[in-house]
Image (cartoon, rainbow, N blue to C red; front, side, top):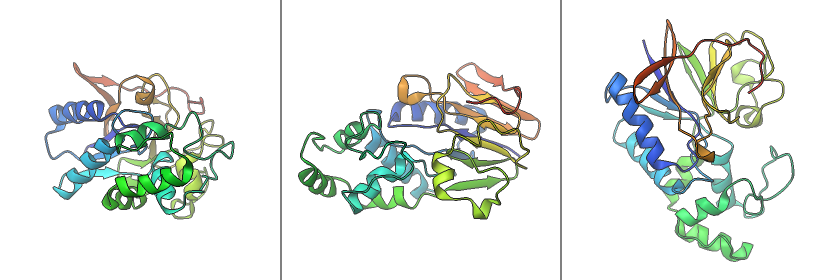
Length: 246
């Protein structure tokens, strides 16, 4: 039994292809791969990432893609140009917030991100294929495997999985990162960028910061443990003390 997982992609199509290549060398073309979300924003080719993953699923690849907080922005902007994500710490619109990376996503679809909001919305509706919006808005919030629970940001400790709120699953940090609770399955997540994949005992953070110029982490999980996949092969991921933030 084996599970592969890939961290936050953020428009980094070439890094994604590289992560898939490392996985295929380790587990073959039919390996089950779960992606923790945040397909879009910040990186240079959000459109390419969405089309690559959706095409792979249509072609029958064993690829699961869970929903990240960034994956909500484009689809909701298309639906409602005034929508502001309630998970944001400051109530700024996706296209106005300097750190969210909307401009890169819009540019990948050939849209000028400096347009006034009404024209920007109309141009985005024209440029984004409907199937891309449907793909992003229909991504599952989590994937439960016998070896791990894969979710974008984490879970609210002590709450049944079926009762978890979407806002927590895609946005949570406080209350989860510092928790030393036994969540049952190992929780594999991203959302909080760190220097490299780190195992905390009860959770495994695989957001290595591809959005900020670092590598896109790919891991393999087996009953015996977890490993980071590198160009040289497997590097063991040994648990650090639970409850350490990051």
